Amino acid sequence: MSWTDLRSDTVTQPTPAMRRAMMDAEVGDDVYGDDPTVKALEAAAAERLGKEAALFVPSGNFGNQLALLTHCQRGDEVILGDDCHIVWHETGGAALIAGVQLRTVESDRGVMPPDAIRRRIRVGDDIHWPRTGLICVENAHSNGLVIPLSVMAETAALAREHGVPVHLDGARLFNAATHLKVDAKEIAQHADTVMICLSKGLAAPIGSLVAGSADFVARARRNRKLMGGGMRQAGVLAAPGLIALNEMSARLAEDHARARTLAAGLAALPGVAVDLDAVHINLVWFRLPDGVDGAALTAYLLERGIKANPPEDGLMRLATHWQVDDAAVERTLAAMRAFLAG
Ligand SMILES: *Cc1c(COP(=O)(O)O)cnc(C)c1O
Image (cartoon, rainbow, N blue to C red):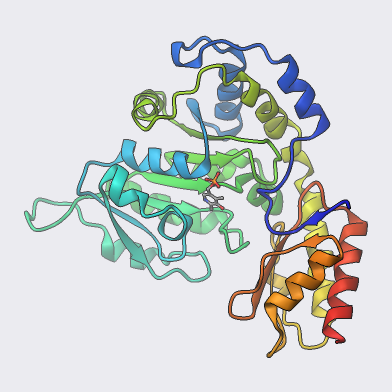
């Protein structure tokens, strides 16, 4: 059976071109700085993100934690949204690795109100206070919304005013850039450092990058080794990463269009609630009618070759990506319609 996998964009498999590039990649020992393909990927990412340098890391989670470790001192406070990935989905790593305290701001669907950030910034010499070491923002947010550039700019200005750096979790930065119709660097300019994932909608098998100043990246390179992320002939992974960055980033509008088609089709089903204005990227969130058995729904879809994560509290998420074509969207809508019709 050929599967339609809507669980996430992390399920994307490398494209045929990526597999060929992996086969042919020129490699060396990257811990010695000898891998030309890794170097090419890091240079290309720095260029795309408008930063001096970039560092190849195993995952987005690793990249975020590396940024916290490199920006902060132990005991520092990091200001970030209460619904962000670093708080929710990184295994509490901030306490364990960087040894920092996460000071959350109640996020308004991914937007941290600048006033709320301002009230939490602690700089000065009061011996009771932790030092604010970093502010983290996320764009696109993992709730599927793109944060407006004006909010990014306001947060950056506020941080600069207090001498606090900003880290951007840009796991889906190219989705955000596609939605805003700007270059990724237009978003990244509002942060000192940025993490991007190659292994989500960009379809690389593995890998993320952290970009920033040359000095920051040099310190991050040392910390990457400390965290066990020094990779040897990593050119075999950087080669598909270059295709992800250079080619796959240019086709995300297709995934976004299919997400909108899927969302509109779901909205037309009886009792299904979709906020169509909230479908910015490739993620579609929707609420099922009361009383729907989530486990029965996902089992029904699976029998028809469609993989989906079960709803949580009636809320369900589907993701589009390069392996979800128009026919897959239609098949999914037909299956949902049939299931809900009983
Ligand atoms: C997926 C994701 C990450 C982590 O990426 P992994 O490569 O899965 O570790 C970080 N931040 C956000 C917003 C994400 O969506």
